[in-house]
Length: 289
Image (cartoon, rainbow, N blue to C red; front, side):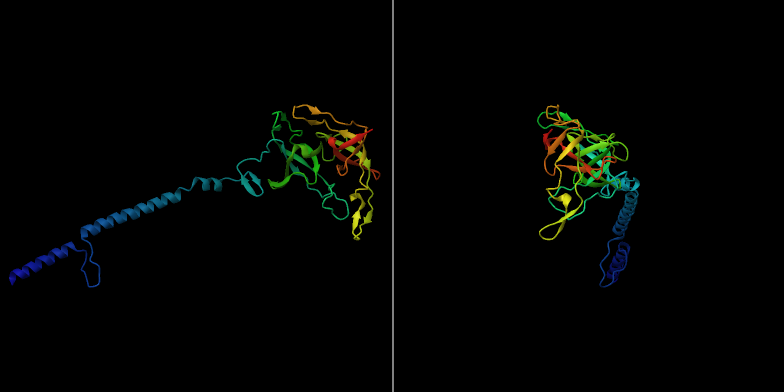
C-alpha cells in the first residue's frame, strides 16, 4: 500500500509543477507554464509591435492627403480645384464677362429669331493658334490678352473660373476688339472678315399677330433692314494657304446683305434715333454700290 501512495504523491508533485493552475470541472485544461509563458511573451510582443506600428502609421499621413490639406487651391473651375491655370488650346479664347444688364428689345421671344443682344468682356487667355487640317498652315489668334472684345449673345461656353463668369469661344466668334471701357469708332477694330454698317434704325412700335399676341416690329422680317453703309472693315479671313481673303467692300460703300445676318452693336456717338450700327460677315454681303 505504501508504494502506491508514494507513486500517487510523486504524480501529484509533477502535475502541480507542470500546470498553470488547478483544473476544476468544466474548465479547459491549460497549457504548461513554459508554453503559456512563451505564448504570453509572443502575444505581448505582437501587441506591443502592433501598437508601435499603429503609432507610426498615425504619424505618417498619406502623401496625397497631407499635400491637399496643407496647400491652398490657386485655381478653381466651376468650384473645383485645378492643378494649374486654365489654358485655352488652338484657336480658343477665354473672355471674362462684363457684369452688365442685357440689352434686349421688347416683345415676345421668338425661338428661331436671332437675338440682337451683344455682350462684352476682357480677354484673359488665348490659345496658340490652329493649324489647318489639310495644309498645316497655322492660323494665328487675332486678339491679345487684356483686349476688350464684343461677341454675340449665344457665342461661347460659360464657365466659372476664379470666382468670375468666363466664356470659352473660338477666335472666329469674336466680332470686334477695342480699347478702354467704352467703344468708340476710333478705338474699335473689326476682327477677321467682320464689317460694321450703319443702317436705318428699326421702329420701336408693336404689331399684333393673328392670335392677338403683341410682337415687337423690330423682330419681324419685313422691318429688319438689309441695306447699310460701310463704316469699318476687318483685315479679312485667312484661307488654308495662309493668304488673306480680300474683303468685298471698303469704307463708304453701300451693301445689300442677307436677312438676319446682322448683330446690333452700340457705339457711343454714332447711334441716333434714325440710324443704328450692325455687324455682318463679309460672306453675308450679296451686292454693293
